[in-house]
Length: 171
Image (cartoon, rainbow, N blue to C red; front, side):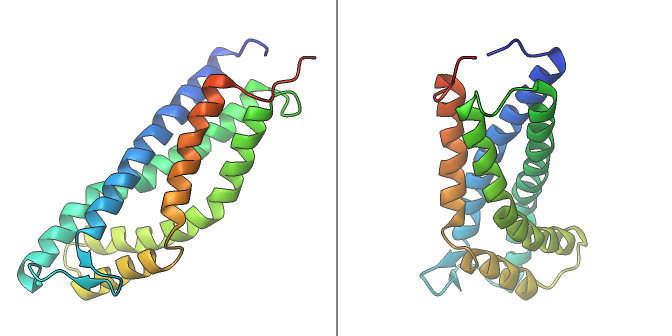
């Protein structure tokens, strides 16, 4: 593998750091949101009521915002790394696999991020209807329900490809 320029190394570090933060934010977000609901019917837990639900939803805002913005940073920095590194995908199979996996995940994550954007807009407005936010969170869980696990495991596998760099051909 050829030596990378400083600029491409910067984009690589930003991409790695942002995907690490994204994985943590995604896991945190999933754990927090699933604490609101119980059972497969996604019924609000008994200890949550109209008085405290708005505070709980507002407390979720930072994890949703971090998850939302860091994924955008990852996508931009990863594609800038691909462009600036000038690595040949034919010779670097590990990078090709990461690129293809990222391209496959983007549309699904973009769909879920549209729902997240609606939640963010409602929560930032300050005066929001808790039922509307809960409906959006339920929709996000029901639509592509197992996708978050697949996405997290996919992005965790990137570390294997980055460290061991399998499928490298010599020129």
